[in-house]
Length: 177
Image (tube, rainbow, N blue to C red; front, top):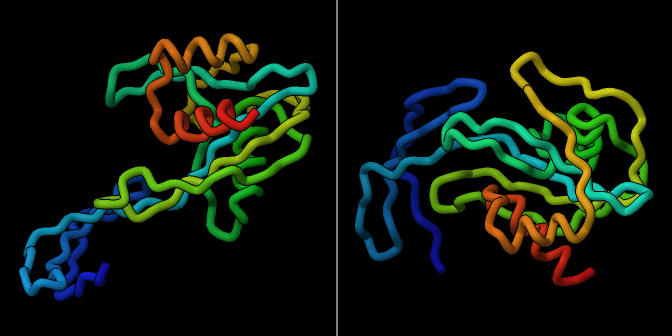
C-alpha cells in the first residue's frame, strides 16, 4: 500500500484529553480528501493482572459516554518519559494497590487506526500482590474487583465486558493459557 500525502494540517482543538486535527490528504490515486479528521491521543496501557492466588485484578468504574457501569482491566495513559511497562506498573499500583510479579507485553494494538494515532500496550502481570492502597486521581472513582478464572471467562462469553481494547488481550490470554 502506498502512503497518503499530507497537503495541509490544522488543529481544531488541543486539550489534555482531546486533540483533533483536520488534514487535507492526497491518496495514491490522486484523489484529494479536504476533510480527513485525526484524533491524537497519548499511548495507552492495560494490564491483565493475576495475583499469587490466581485471581484476576479488575476495576469497576462508571463510563459516562456510554452511561455504563463497567468492569475492566486496569488501564491508563503512558506518561511521557516512561517506558510502556513502567506506565502499566504505575497504573496498576495507583488504581488497585497491586504490584510486583512478573511482567510481559503480550500485544500492541490500535483502537481505531483509521482516525486515531495512538497505540495500546497490553501487559500480562502474574504473581502480583497487594502492596498498598489505591492512589486515585481526583477524577477517578474506581473499585477493585478480584475475579476467578471461571468468572472472567463467564464475563467474556456473556458479552458483559465492553471495552474492545481489553477484550483483545483477554481473548488472546485465554486462547494461549
